[in-house]
Structure formats: structure tokens, C-alpha cells
Image 1 (cartoon, helix red, strand yellow):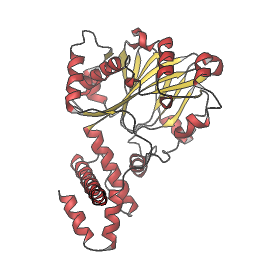
Image 2 (spheres, one colour):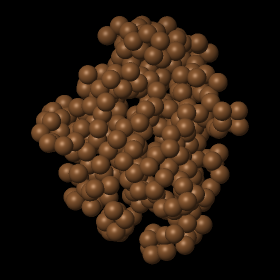
Image 3 (spheres, helix red, strand yellow):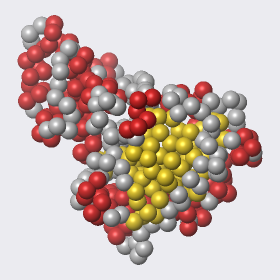
Image 4 (cartoon, one colour):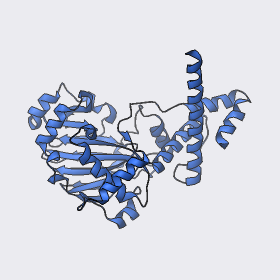
Amino acid sequence: MACVGNARRFNQHGRASTQLARSTLSEPKGRVMLGERLPPARVSVLAAGARQQPRPWIQFDPEQIERSYNRSPFLVKHRLAERPQFMLPSLFALCRRMPTPAVKVRIGKIPGDADFDSSLHRYNHGLTLEDAVEHFEEREAYIVVYNPERDAEYRPVIEGLLGEIIVGIERLDPRPTWYSTYFFISARHAVTPYHMDREMNFLLQIRGHKTVRLWDPADATIMTQAQKDRLLSAEGEARPAYLPSFATKAKVFELEPGLGVHHPFIAPHLVTTGPELSISLAITFRTARSDVWADAHRFNHRMRRLGLHPRAVESNPAVDATKAACLRGLRGMRNAVRGGTEREGA
């Protein structure tokens, strides 16, 4: 690979090139990755199952997908409220049998500009899962269930929905590589503070009302290229913060049961619930194309640390692919060196 060859040549010519190699080779820091990878064979099985579904649970408009997928948010219709697994007693039972780290609780009413990554801990206020479940509305609680697809009862249901998404986007984005799901169970007037995820998402409202504000990730007044590069590189560090000037730039979606909204790749968003209990399911996913974008952003971040000014990601697919290939090649070299060192010391 050309990039790997260049790195080797750089390493023969002194200090600056060594700094380049080390910077490019460093892995993203941060939290443990949730979710599951999707091998191609598994994607094929899920898609085949979705095609055999006589009546889809999610309704995708092919023209809307063609026009807006991963460009701008849009609404979808669904029938999830018909499923007994998505009713409150079933979800509370799920909360009780999931592993403790997979269920987080806090109070619902928090500032919209609160730090997203610390909000579950900061606003827990001593609330336990049992207390939240037994006195949910009285405590005005907010529960997040991480990866319910790991539960035996929920896995076939959620994988069926994932298969429908795979089929719905396959003309534009045919190679899903990873997914993760979350249930959000919220009391009245709860807030999910402003943040951006590192993938795409379909947020599906099952009960109650939700107001979803989404911002254009391509708007440099909301998130600069350097901020996006850092976001994709430093998963454990602070995400770009909300500013009051953002308020008028949001697209606002009012979700009722049976409606969902598509979040494009790393689109900033802020969510509030209405005056009653709310249940929603988020199906987040990555694809081969978004993986290229993510690695190109990581490459750019490393270049910026060297004082360079790389071309913006998504401005040229060939350049993005080259950056991603460089990063992956250098990462592979480092892993090979580490593996060899471990074998020598064994």
C-alpha cells in the first residue's frame, strides 16, 4: 500500500517522520464499544428474513430514502406499538433481567446543554433501578437500556427490525458493518441533552410524545471540520458543546407513537419528552461507507495535530478512501509489531 510505503520511508529520515508515524498509529481513546459487528453473511440472512415479512414493521418511502438518507433527517412510519415486547410491563421486566451495567437510570428533567457523557452519573441523584421501576412517574425517572438485542426474547424482534432497515437503505448504503440498540423510557418533560453520535440512527417512538431537534452536521457554524475529526478520534473526550445561537438552526420533529426520525451520520440532536411517559427505540448502525468517513476523520485529526490542514471528509470519496486505507494500513503495521513483540517475550 502506498501509504504504508510512505510511512516506512518517512521512518528512515528522522524525527519529524517518526512523529508522523506515531501520531497516525495511535488508536482512538475512550469508552468500550457497545453493539455487534455485522459480517456480510449475517447481513444477507437478516435482509432475506425482512424480505419474507408479509407486512413490514417499518414503512420506508424509497423516494424519501433516495432523496434524504444520510443527507438530512426525515420521518418514517412504523407499527412497533403493536408488539407486546414494547409495552411498559415487558420493558420493566427486561430492565430487571438485563446485566446491571446495561441499564442506567437518572432523573429526567436536566438542562438541555448538560454534558451528555456524564449526565447519567451526574443526575442519578441516588436513584436505583428498583426505585425507578416501582415509582417511575413519581420519581420522574429516565431509564436507558443498552443493547436489548442481547436478551433472548428481544433479539429476534430487534434483528427483524434491523433487517428491514438493511433492506430499506441497501440501494444507497448496501454494507452495514455494526449495530447497537437502546430503549429510552422517560417520565414527563425529560431531556436527552445536546450531543452527536458516531453513527446513523432511526429513533422510533412507541409511546408518548417526543420533540427531536436535529442539526445539519455539514453546517460549520454548528460543528467545524476540526471538531468532527476530533469527535471521531477521541471517543472518551468531550463532544462539541451546545451554544444558544444553535437554537434557530434546528429542524424540529414532533414524534407520536407510530413515527420515527432518521438521524444522519454524526448529526447533532437534542430530545425532550411531552407531559406523559415516553418509550422509544433507537437503532443505531454503521456501514462500510461511514467506516471510511470515520477513519478519514481520524486520519485528519492526526494530521491536524501535526499542524497540517487536511481536506474535509466527504468532499472527495477517493481522498476519503485513501485516508482510511492509510490509517488502517498503519494500524495494521502497529498491531503486527505489537504481536511480534509479545511473541518474542513469551
